[in-house]
Image: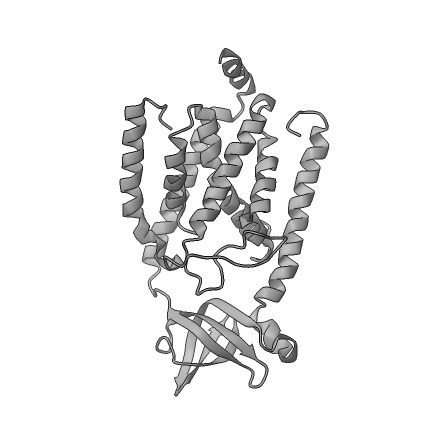
Length: 153
Length: 153
């Protein structure tokens, strides 16, 4: 995974277009769901890495988002599901930038197809170099948010 | 689908489907990228399988081949060593039963220092804690307040 700051910045840009701050919170939380699930399975439940691969697939994200939205107020649930899912899918899109030597950074089509995909733009060990770039993007997003009169996170 | 009717069943079904998806991904994953020790235990079965070893250490080098250690397992690799003995490397290659050995397709060294990795981990943890704190501010233990706000809109 890229560092979670990069994931956070990646989801803050589309969050500019969401007015309801509760939905923004769900969108942002949604982008962390795949990693929270996979790291939880790996570190807490001691599952193998391949077991948690499903958390980074499109179907896995939709299922996890559905499960998470059940803990939200009923009136907000369907919109919450959409926000959580969007956040999770943005997470998968961001993970695609990694270079895993051609073996695939994510397997988005599990269980229908186990093909791995990656764009191969950055070594997973070097994602820390994205942080300064992320900080600039975040400053621009927060500036735009203030100018547009959106509620700040 | 998003209502409170049959809430317990929806919750249980969500957990069950995610668990089954994990089991499926785990079974498929064994075939896609089996552990090195499994290949060495059953060389004939895994002959010709492409392996990705995310992290390993170069133990020794010779002309046109080197030996790596990963998860307490050693395997001979044919190809130009990406680093000197002791360096951390990542390798993608095809497993060959005769030898047994790995025919390297791509390999590169990994950063030796852990300091920069720690920066990334710390930033990630701070970001997650911040997002969870914000999430709790909006949702945690305040369902009535949330409902009241929803009705105001």
